[in-house]
Length: 605
Image 1: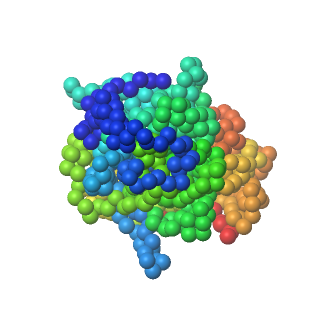
Image 2: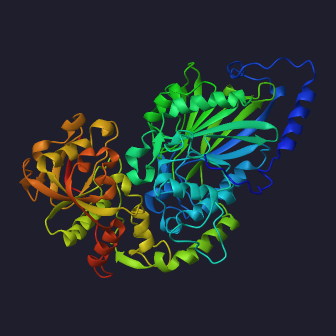
């Protein structure tokens, strides 16, 4: 595994080995020579004597995705449940406010650690993405992140770039962004216990780390979802193998226990789907395990009872739920939504005799990163510094819109922004191949809304290059392939079957393609096959069609394996350029682009 350079830490986090040993010996001495023999972690889990415990605080975040500035539109709001049962939206997020929130939360806590569960970088707005996420790593260093697991998006630019973010150094192609200034990398370890380098057989980065906070030792094991190769570009994970999440955590739990570490937290980049979108709802109102579904539930039920809590991610949802561990005891599973809008506070007791966390003491809650609080000045200075460097590119006007152009969600399979992107890719693709018939866009590749309200000094309705970058930050290319009509129908069926059956991934489609999606059905039958039409004409299963798509989909990403079977591929230019060129060509200050009706897909419920 790649070594991590040791750098000087801030006073809050700096604990030398000698001081830790002294504190531990002093504690043992205070207990006296006649102290009882250590009991096992499972025994301790039922409760510890107050005189033998001390407070421990964990602050957790996930899926930050380089959102240094407050996210725009719905991406920058959270849903809050009110006492009377109604809900309201609250503006949230922004690194300046996140730093202030975390620093406020730490006050009065002698022992506090800040952790994350992956996707801190990747799919980032231009302010971070333009500089290969160096600004976000520097922000995390400043706000005091102690450890994170690796997420799937940390592989967007490949393993070598991930190692650079950990260890520092200038970008191999773009170099250093300022004369005399070299990127130093992350002060915190990025854990990848289930990611194996096939050449060496070793983990790509550290599998676990032990944090010693004034004598309290806590072990952290970090994993990403096993299915990462299915949702990132093949090039990004070339030469890597991804192992089962629970099996890997259980393996390193035993390793930590052999080292005398019994307080153990898993940082898992996989998540679930809560029954409510409100961040503060009671997940266990119907009993332990009733308020959450999805992959993390199965993982949690397999993770060793010796693990005290699970900090999770990936689905961008907010929840603080209990899921029974393999011994049948409730265990807290948390997620703090995304983009730095929330953070999770976990308060617990550490038992000095057993060196374990008292399971029954673990309490958690999600808190809003409110924008009404003062900004952290050091984060403001960092953001302003990078904004100055980015301004010549980010502030360029590329188009005009008459209203917000929004992306979809589970309740809106088709979105105006999805239509816009698909139309832009179709128009670009026809400049490469005049025979292109249609374009498809994966919904997960649309990362932000286009908001009419000005985000800076550009004026309402103006779309800047930076705003376009936030929508499509992956640097995919627009590719063109030939598919038969039968293959095209299979692709549409793969939206709601196989790996996408439980959580459909509805492709966004270009103008002229229409079909009916019957959500009352199940599996592939939810796509009404004889309803699929192009230009009003039924799709001919034996005919061939030229289809534009991004390079991620062309490789079979998101479970669309049929697209990978397409033939006669042409590789075009950057997908963001297609969007920018389309907006420039189809909008002006006097005639702004208006959102579509998003009615190409007829949805039956």
